[in-house]
Amino acid sequence: MHREALLENLGAMQPTEAAQSRSPTGVNADGESAAAWRVSEAAPCGRWTLAVRFRDGLAGEVDLGHFLASPAVVGTTFEALRDEAFFRQAQAAEGVVRWPNGADLAPDAMYDAIRAAGRWVVP
Image: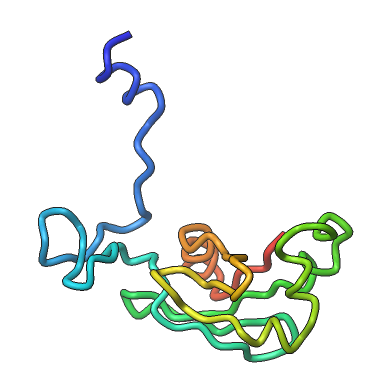
């Protein structure tokens, strides 16, 4: 198959809204993606809950309680987030919510859920 046909069959991943950028490459002056769904701020606001804001100003909550209570988390990088002191170390870095051990959250899925309901309950 030709390259164009392969790309058409796979479908290109697109953000849910057009990236706002002053650059034709979609990259801001800091060298980061200017996509609307990139996280600009994140702060703990409750037990296993974060308040987040995106580059386009959209804001909402992320609830990881159900996810972190799941036995599927045992043995993963997310297990450390069960410790509340460690969970509170979440920060926005390079457009994603990230913890010191490398655990991070998908900003595009978070954006879609928050845009639709104001909140993302991580399954």
